[in-house]
Length: 455
Image: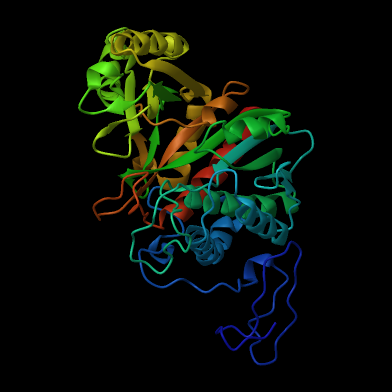
């Protein structure tokens, strides 16, 4: 296609086995190699871009079969895709347009993606040698209910919805991995099958990973891997850890009810505001005293409400929050402990208690052999200096449910910037976009190493 908007005389999307005929005005635009087909997406301007990221980071090894060259061509498009997703975020369970975009991009790479039953997630197999194993790579695609406060061209265009956890980066990275591995499969150099999982609803309960598993997303899979953005690590660093790397995370909601009444006569009713105050200040401390200190249990209420008038004691009050714990055994006991402590604290107030304890996700516990694969892949993709030790986080991740069925590991991808206020789940969160090609290189090497290791 001809276009006045681009410098190239010819601009077209990558497709497997695509060919360009000679253009008289520019004989250089002629090739049978897909590598030389240019993307119609221009390099985004502003911010830190992957154009400053070398094709092979210092100390690393080149990707096989000239994939570094293909990655260099793909980087502008991947950044543009990330920015589009960032500008058009979708909440958990509503990722229909995001899933459609992913499916289109994978189809343009010559792959055959399939939608999850609800249409808000995508699974795509890259078929290599039929006698090889099946490994899976997962990215989550949902956004958070936050208002984007960044002053950037790709700021969210959806009120109250924002990619504040880096899932847009996870998605762009896995798309890039799919494009490169499709090239290897096309020339017969992929030693097995790689399943790309673009998962919805990571941020809510019930978890989207359970939907993927129910839909057969782990069928025949022998290992699974994932990345998660870490703003505390610079680009080029990957946080690795054997064993638990996240905490278990559950949702707790407590509803209190009573007759209500006048604030002048609290003795004639049940003072629910007082009861709510006791709940949110006493219960977290008391629960932590019922478990070993090294279990790392943390109960924090993020929402509390009661009443609408200054002189009326309300008849309803509510508090909700999360319980997080590092230890699996303590996680198993947590619902019973919380229920008992809440009853003990509220009983003297006379309020009626309705406790909803919603099981969330266990800790992500990384398999040692999977970490060996990730460590070797990090050295190959980013050099020996790319490997970084990382502590167990109190954050929850529903990647843990996959690891209940098959071994695997979650790594932390460095996306840190020098700007302040970039923590996860913060409305100002943003990334150094050079992390995208770094993540692609890492996951390509991870896939190839995993396929070779389990043959």
